[in-house]
Amino acid sequence: MRVILAAVARDAGVTAQQVELLCVLERDQPSLDALATLLGCDKTNITGMVARLIRRGLVSRQPDLRDRRIIHLRLTDGGTSVQP
Image (cartoon, rainbow, N blue to C red; front, side):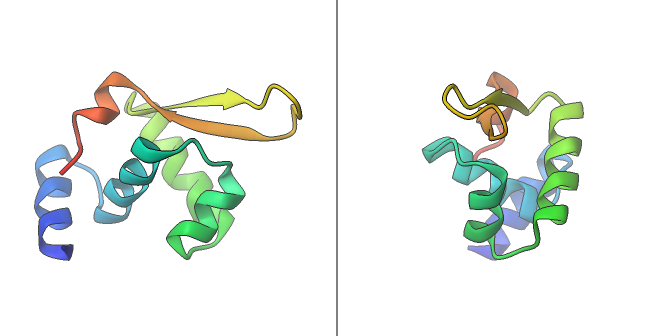
């Protein structure tokens, strides 16, 4: 699986961990905290990865309708094209 992720990442110009993040977003729209837990890394790492993916147009931020402190992430059309 890691070999496939690395190949997809290389072709898309992102890291393997960013591809994992995009794969999670294809199934769900988690908060940053939940995403950090799912990927087993620190929230500060997620924040940086998300910022880079947003700059590339692969991910967008969506505020939670019930709690404006929570931000959910959503794949853009460009983000869905990076899937393995």
